[in-house]
Length: 64
Image 1 (spheres, rainbow, N blue to C red):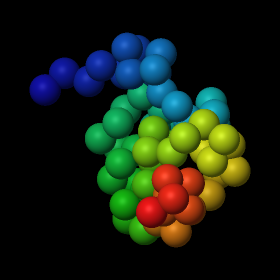
Image 2 (image 1 turned 90 degrees about the vertical axis):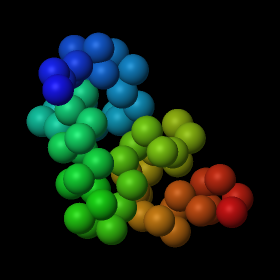
Image 3 (image 1 turned 135 degrees about the vertical axis):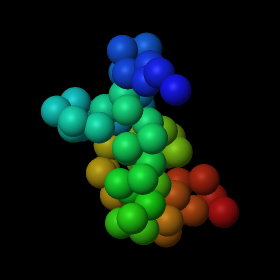
Image 4 (image 1 turned 30 degrees about the vertical axis):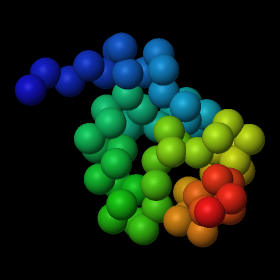
């Protein structure tokens, strides 16, 4: 499968622009799940800006 890094980067919700995984969704998801987190694209923009990628922050952000 071909990586669509350039296209993915244009719509990436992560504000950490120097991240080397930016636009490489498979690497990003794998990294965050290993750390018991979710990637930025799972969060509303205001919650994403806190850089708290925890499952708890996800539930709080979406009022779950």
